[in-house]
Length: 311
Image (cartoon, rainbow, N blue to C red):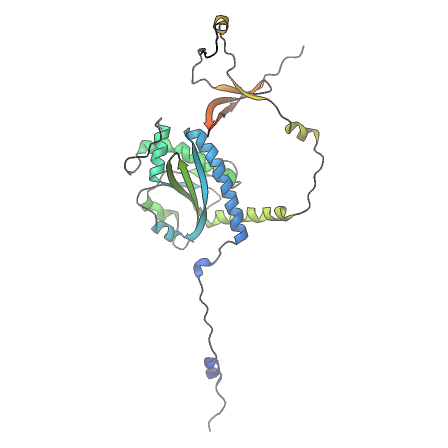
């Protein structure tokens, strides 16, 4: 005797199947809102880097944040050229290192500036020497500290490592690791180059937590403007600031002989720093520098205040 009712297996097989394509690479992508916040964060880092590198290299330059992209670590490594300046930053709170990757052409240009050159592009592409590696360490340290400040990491948490070859990158990640590549553009005079900062997933997660913590404050429409206390009003007041050469003596006859267009010899060694004074009181040692087309002062060590003795 046969059973006319179809079996359960045959019924399920007869149901139409709906197949939807799935892109596994898009998993764990950040939202558009978080992406805009991360972009704004690193645009601020780029502005701070512009000011810091301009003063350090003594050349008019501009750093711009060009955006970021997420990918697997092996995909990023596969697209790296043979000649690339790569420096790792490590931190005790991160299992994976942060990688700074510079175009070799723009790195050679910075070496030329640091050695007193005019910042002319290199005639040929070549690898860096050990001496040039040592010269550039201060530049990489400066970039690291600016990034550390923008990411609100505790002072000194990032540790600068030695430059590594592209062939050695396998030890800084595993296949399948998700990384975020921050793309920056660097213009030094007529020369344009780029550099990238490769973030491990742990650091990206920390930055996203900071971004989400800031978002409720930005959305809030309730604002209070309490009256400032006396301390805050003092901090907001204006004070005259000047860069001076203290304890400098000039002969009276030299002053009497001054005419329009005259040049007076101060007889002060160039290596001696000046003094940044506020309200006539010295605060920091200062060295004259240029910030773009403006004259500026790079601050050195803080000067101990000497209070006048009471009568």
